[in-house]
Image (cartoon, rainbow, N blue to C red; front, side, top):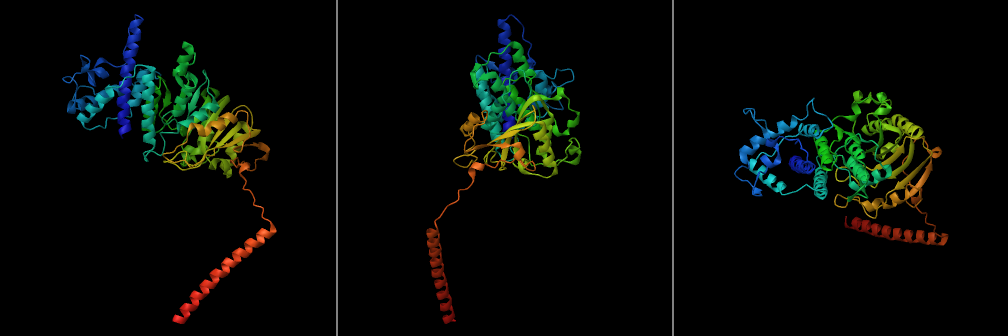
Length: 480
């Protein structure tokens, strides 16, 4: 997969520029910078060595020599690049360190560019990129995000890599994470929600030239102790951790694990989070062994994830999660039980009905976003239906402006043609689906005289058709 290959090369180039910047900062302060990578494995030595400001073609490896250095060999004492980087994930390394995260990334990666000359060409192209400034890094993050979006749209990954950015931004704006809070995504994927939460806290109106005024301790907490997540798919995990580091979150607490394998009955307050942002997988069927980890057992993946998030929320915590529409209207025992628990133990304050096609091309399932807080029971739900002038397609995806009215209305619970309120006492059988009362079809009132005229006209047309049919049948009979 080309995205996987380009990603590890981009990451190592970024790491090189990051280390050079740290070295220069230390030099100005009269300090010594200890490099993460040994000299032999730094980009400027193996990938694109320089001489007089240009590529040193004599010492730049290519062909089989380059592949041997990157992949290593059983028949050589020389440790290959990938084996060297995997070695960072050791029991002696601080799991919050950049070194450990690098080891975790390369544990699940291999070089699949089989031609050393092709690899040489890719290295030369990426070497021309510079990631020394925040603006450069921002450009890299855009490139990376585009790669992830393409990966999610290639038809073979079930959309597990990419949730549309406008939807992520909207959910994050409503949950509104703040500095000092912990933020969790139980199905992290490429970590789009966590990165958006970081930008929401770090910058004013997402403007990278306008960082918020945070103390040294606050910045350290933001980069090391704020973001948490799980991802079970190896490639998604790799993409997610890389994505976070490339966005400036140097020590993301992302685990490669299946969230649903943990028994939620054992959760304590210390295991919980202030904010949860998620678009967990849905439509799957979980085995009985997994279902045993939940008080309300069901094979529907989305129902288990919802229980997990409810149990993972701190007191006064806030959650915004994408769910398939079926969760809202289904009323069998398991769905009723989970929704009863949700309405009685949490404040479900807002539900957004998303238009069909939000997750095209890899899923056409109708979805909703449900927002709830752990600060009492539900009394009234504010519903908003996102109505668009035209259908969404792969080439015409959801945009920021499609959520503008909702973001302007939800907090004050303003009523429009697209929004309405439902008292919890009016909910029957825990069916909390979004049924817009403002969209009732208008009844056409026709006067009796007009109605009689219409009936006569229709009868006349029928008589004409019957006469034509009768003539045809008579003609056939004569010919026979």
